[in-house]
Image 1: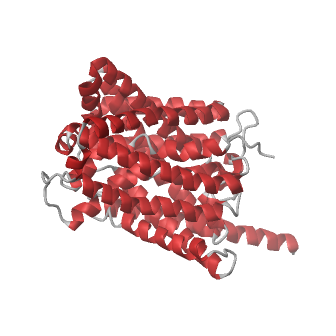
Image 2: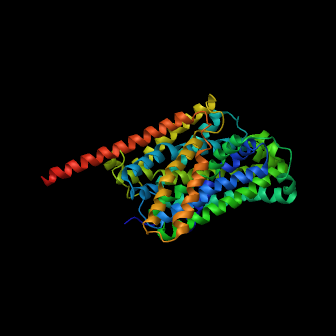
Image 3: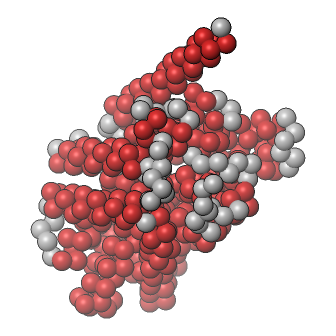
Length: 450
């Protein structure tokens, strides 16, 4: 019997801790850039993007309440189609989790360079990010409980700078003037839709909590609660921070300063020493996001292997009695993360992306897979298994609408078709792999009967 390690608080902090801590710090300038410096328009786009996470969480919560097996959304999809479940699992292992983990670790490297005054070179940022990745992998393999404690602690710490800047901006500045400012550029619909990509990054990560569903105490009760409470906390914090930081130093300055706007804002408020303390909080915040991604990611290959949905399943699914996780599963995920860190370095070094990073495409495409689950919630309502019309039709309908909004944000990305082709190849390979395994299994069973 697998021991239940995590409570409701950890499940909520997984969502809040992964979602908050990276995107909002280094995507605020991108959002303002796409909206022409309009804070009010930025809030509106935040609200649209929030539809995808709030109603998506509520919809997935319906599936979480029905199933407490390990594997997260892989388990939920498995109830409807095993080949599709395998495809979703491979997408998460090879694209979704590792691209986000690599990019967020790189962001931790950026703020570490700012803290210690290192040269702000891409190489320095990437190497520091790699060091963080190695450290957190070791921590989460050696101690499940410590990884959970780190998640809880970092979540609380990361709220400090966000709330600090929000309060300072709202009390020391004039948020009303910021929201109604006419010092903005006129932007088209395409630009506003493009702003959804960095916002989607800022909001993403909530689904990772489902990966530890089997290890959450009373998961059928606690996971749905976490899926509701977590996103609402995130939305509230994001809006007050976005308005606060924009009021504090001005939207155009946020755009001009880019990722350094946090450091500049802290210096203007509390001086160089205080700014370093704030940066430490920010770094811990970002590291907390990486930790949550790794905490969930190292369990994915073993979850797939337990279902015979992954190569060398018999070896990968073996869980270490000492560490409570498959070492081979963790190694597989580590290798894939480091691969994408290299790819991210190359795309940034040679400016292969006109804006954003490789993770934004993976995040947007993941919502296409979520739609599959949202539709099945509607089908469960149609069959009478979900009695509430609001839970069975209205909420998943809004989740589908929100997912389509996010999907529309990345079509203009310069590497969209390349990344989409990779995604499609992985999905088709996974479905073919599982189909072949199933055929061989049926053949073996027929031979035994004969």
